[in-house]
Length: 592
View 1 (cartoon, helix red, strand yellow):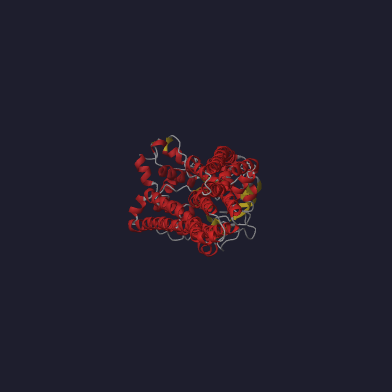
View 2 (view 1 turned 90 degrees about the vertical axis):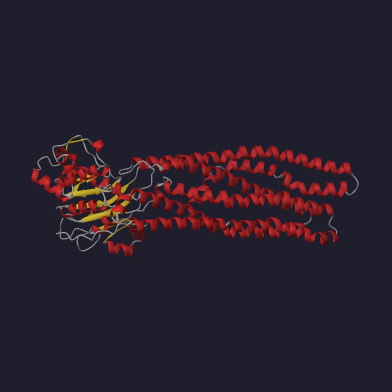
C-alpha cells in the first residue's frame, strides 16, 4: 500500500490552499462542539437551578446561534471539499485512460475492457471514499479537539477522565487497521481469483472435457469458492474490533462520568458541569468517533484497496519508477546453446535495449541484453504486461528502440530494408492474418516457389491436413471471416513454416489451438532448421524449449525450466498458475 499512501499525500500536498480553506471552515463548523457543554453548564447552574429561567433561555439561545454558524460553515466545508476531491478524481480518470491507450497501442497490446470498469466504477469509488475519509477524519480531529478543550475549560479532571478511554479506543482501532486492510485486500483478491478461475474454466471447457480433467478443474474452482467464503467471513469478524473501539472510546467515557459524578460533585463540581461534560461526550466525541471508525473501517478500506488496484493496473507514467526494471543481462544459459562461442554468429543479439511508449512513460525494457544462439529454441514467459510482445516486436524490427541495438545473424535490424528483414525473420502474431484467395496462395505467401510436395510436408508436420480437407483442398477459396481464430492461426503457422527466414518468432501464435495441436506445431518448428523464439502462454511451451527467459520482478533471468524453478519466484508462481488450469505438459523435446 506504499503507492496508495504516496498518491494520497501527493494529492493533499498539491492542494494546500483548498485544504487550508477546508480547515478554516472546519474551525467554524466545530463551534457548537466547543460551546455546547459549556453553555449547557452555564444555563443549568446560573439559570434553571438558580431559579433564573430567562437567563437559562438566553444561554441556550447563544447555543442556537453557534449551531447556525456551524450550519453555514458546513455548507462551505462541502464546497471546499469539492475543490480537493474533484481534481484528484480527474487525475485518476486521466491515468486510467492513459494506461488503457498505452496498452491498446503498444506492440502486441490489445484493448483493455477492464479499463471501462476502472473508469466508470473504481474511479468513482475512490472519489467517494476519498471525500468521505476527508470528511470523517477532519470532523473527528476538529470535533474531538473542540470537545476536549471545552471539557478542559469545565474541569481538567473531567477532561482527563474522558480522554483516557478515548485514546484507548483509538489505539485499539489503529492497531487493528493493518489487519483490516489485509483482510479487505484478501477478500478482493479471492473474488478476482474466483472470477479468473471460472472464466478460464468456461473458456477451456472443451480442452478440459477432452483431457478428462473435469474433476480436477471442479476441485480448483471449488477451492476458489471456499477461499472467497472464508475471506468474507473473516472480514465480517473484523467488525467486532470496530465495535470494541467504539465501546472503549465512545461509551466507556459515559460510564466513567456517571460513576465519578457523585465523587466530583462532592468535591465542588457543579451539577451543570457534569451535565455539560455528558453533552460534550454524547453529542460531540461519541458521534465523531463513530463516524471515524465506521468511515475508516469501511470506506477507508475500500479506498485503499480500490486505489491500489487502479495504481497497479495504470501505474504513473514516471520513467524513474521502472528504471532498471529490465536492466539486467539475460545472457547465459545451458550448455546446449545460450551465447555465441568460438566465433559462431548468434541468431539474435540484443545490446542495451531500452524502449518506452512515449517520452514520459516508464520503460518497458531498460538496458536489456540478450543473446540467442543459432539453432536455439527459446521460450519467453512472464506476467501480463511485462514486455514479452514488445521484445518480439523489437527483435522483428517492427518498432525502433529508444536506445540499444538488435542484430539478426550479425545484421543490424535498424539499418536494413524491409525486404532484407523479411528474409531474416518471420513473426507470427497472436491475431493471425489470412487474406481472401485460395488456401494455396495463403500458404505460399512468404515462399511463392514452394512446390506441392513441400507444402504437403509442411501441412503434415503441423497437423493441418484435416483443416485442408474441411476447406476443400489447396485450391479452395478462403473467406477469412468464416474461419475460427484457431484455423487462422494454423494457416499462419504453416505459412511461417514454409518461409525461408532462419528465425521464427511465435508471439502467442498458438493460443487459440488446443494443447495437443499446439504441441504438434511447436514440435514441428523445433525440428525445422533455424532458430525458434516462442512467447509462451502455456507451461508446456516453456518445458519444450531448450532455454527459458522469464521477466522476473527484479530482472530478466534465463535458464532451463529446472534452473528457473530453483532461481525465480516469478517463474515458480507462473508454473503453479499454469499447472492448475492446464493438462500435464508434454515431455521436453530432444532436437536432432
